[in-house]
Image 1: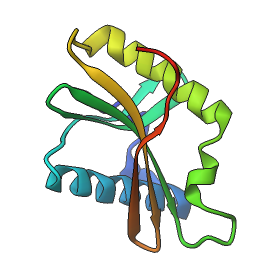
Image 2: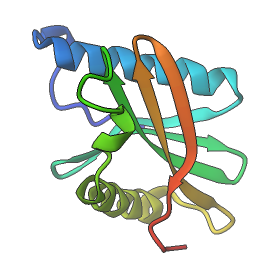
Image 3: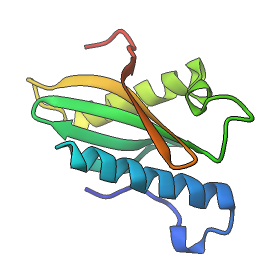
Length: 130
């Protein structure tokens, strides 16, 4: 499945973009080590992007990855606001329509990485669908 990245990360010069990509790669390694299969990286619908979509059996999780150098501006998980959640749910609906299977169970996870320490919050929020 195509990743949906519109620009080549090799061309990125912004440290935040590079840190974000490194965090997504760390999150992928973490998930793979726990038996998840990554089915999409940076799945994009319009301007909205789901960082990772992973599957383990019939469980499909849509994952927002937040990477920070520190907590001076709060927890990375606080950056997953109500507006961001609504965007993620809309994009997830598109993925489900295209690739979902009847027995699938869907959830939304967040992975926060601060100073290379990873915290995985499974079932971080529930949108009230399916």
